[in-house]
Every structure is written in C-alpha cells, then in structure tokens.
Amino acid sequence: MLITAKQPSEITLPAHNQGWPTVLAFLCAHFPRIPAERWQQRIRDGKVYWYQGEAITEQTPFLPSRRLCYFREVAAEPKIPFLHQILYQDAHLLVADKPHFLPVTPGGDFVNECLLQRLKEDTGISDLAPLHRLDRDTAGLVLFSCNSISRPHYYQLFQQGQLVKRYQARARLSTNLQPPLSWQLSNRIEKAQPRFINQIVPGEANAQSIVELVGVEGDIGQFQLQPLTGKTHQLRLHMLSLGMPILNDAYYPELLPKNTSDFSRPLQLLAQQLSFIDPLSQRQQHFVSQQRLF
Image 1 (tube, rainbow, N blue to C red):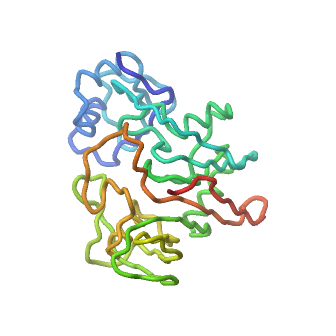
Image 2: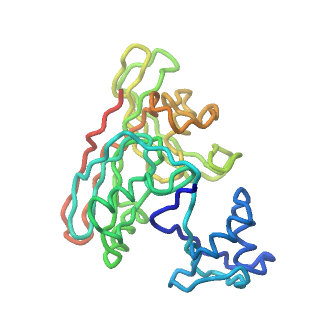
C-alpha cells in the first residue's frame, strides 16, 4: 500500500508548450520514473488539481505557466530517529534546528518525514514555508516564514545578500596545515550528471566562499565556512577543490550508493550561525545551532 503525502507538492507548468497535448502528457514526460498508469490513478483519485482547487481530468489540456498541485506517493518512507528544535518563533518568523539526515521538504523517498511537516504539526501553522533550503545530509539552522503577507520581506534578505551564514565542517587535512589559514574561493558551479550533483567548471564565477582553518585534531581539520553566494553544494565543492572533501560526504569526490537507513556516518557539515537585521522590527538577530559535529 502506497504512503501518500499529507500536503500537496506544487509545480508551475513551463511557459512554452513543448508538444504536450495534456497535463497528463506533461507529467509523464517530466517525471519519467513514475508510470503513466499511476498518474492516471492519481488524477482519478483527485490527487492532481490546479492551484486554486479546480480538478483536472486525463483530457485536461496543457496550460502554460499554470500552477499545479499533486500528492506524492511512495511505497515505503524511512523514519529519521533524530529530533529537531524550534529555537525562535514570532508572528512572522520561525528558526528551526535540523538534525542530520532529515529533509527540509518532501522529496525522493520522503513524503511526510521532513522538517516542514514536523513543524506544521508542532505549531498548527498550515502556511509555514521555508525561506531557504538545507541539504538533507547537513544539520543546522533553517528559517521559516509563518505567514504569506510578510514573507516577501524575508525572501529579500537572501535575494539581496543581507544575511550572514556561517558553517562548521570537518575534513581530513591534505598536508600538515596549521591554523590560522584562510582561503577566498571564487569559481563557476554548474549541474553535472546525474542532475542532483554539481561540478566546478570554467567560466564566469557564480559561487564565492570564505574558508578558514580554525583548529586541528590529529589529521582532521576544523573549518569555519562562510558562503557569499548560495549555489547547491557550494561548500562541499569548495572544500573538495582545496583537496579536503568534507568527512562522510556521499556525493563528493565519489558518488556512493544511496542508503537512507544508515545513520552512522553523518556529513560533517553544520549550518551553525545566522545573522541579519529583521526587515520588520529592524532588530539585529543572531541564532546559533545547538547541533554538534563529531
């Protein structure tokens, strides 16, 4: 029996029709791993509909730029045996502390076991939305908007680079390095194959980070990282480019087989600190994760 998501996922149809006569045809092309028969059954069960609530049928024509809702389904969903914390909450903002392995939003094998769903159940706020993402493998701070009216003000913090993020990481040292040492990295990051990993390529820089070696334990370095841009896997790739990939990284330098039930080797990367001026109260805010690397 399939497990169905408690909350719908959303997708905006492309602005240009590339030959899809119906919404069903688009879904089958966009999600090729899901059989057409399953999409047909979801549609018949009312699990696919327009954003405003209007139902669709198997014959509903493709409509460019329209927003679509659908309920994801999985045969089995892993359970993450680690707790999250709410560090701060007001009428507009919630700051959560995420453990390793827990996804922020539904994806892949996860439809309900995610930080967003946990927080909705904790708070009763159905309109809760993450303001940014954190890899499932990474622990630490995640900001959520509590209502849609003030949400754009907080999105602007990220869009305008007005939020300072600091991470901790542990990596095996490539040579006999001693702190203090720092590197300012600037390069171009693009999608690789498979599409969920990235790579550094020649070209105009679109990713910048500051990396500092702040401590040494044997051959393991303790690093503080500050991303100045927000490319996916940016810090992981920048550490790799220094010849010191983050410990227990299942993607870089080698893509390891997927294993959602092994919790023994957490990625040694922590979103430790967030600092910003609240756009509504104009107060300086500073949050520190209670999670720890080991």
